[in-house]
Image 1 (cartoon, rainbow, N blue to C red):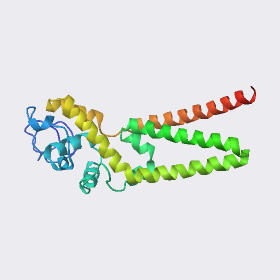
Image 2: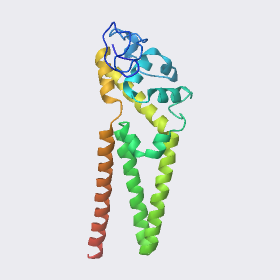
Image 3: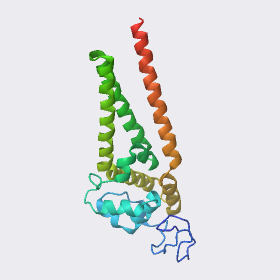
Length: 221
């Protein structure tokens, strides 16, 4: 079985976790447990022992904070309170929580919006005016995105956890195998946050270089 607090694998007769010191008050999930293969369908699943166990395996760091936020709201998939970490860290927090699809999706939206504003400002404004508009738009977009993450961060992460746990439940019927997969797919990653940040910088630089190259070719055509 696994520790209900940190997810460390324990022997069947362990009364406490040797890693975090937590008591093993949640019984091990048997492979034949019919509930284990049932997809998550409602908010009530948050209060079940099985889902609490799998949520702790998947979220791991700060699980008490997130589960507490989600339980405070009747529809955590739509509204789950403010998240300061998401507000201050933005895309870095998204990557740290391994939400890679969300990370690159939001990054692409930001780049596309900046390209549109850049194209419009170059066509209708002078160089200095275009610089002011782009700087102001970039600052405003960061502020809006930060507020958006603060408001929707917990909800975004809830849906991420919900979807992944549901998929793992459907794919893996063996309880031990399912627990291992949840631990691998969930948790946090400083490495992922750094790599995604580097990737975002590279993508932005390539985009900017592409714009200047296309503009130069058009001007010399």
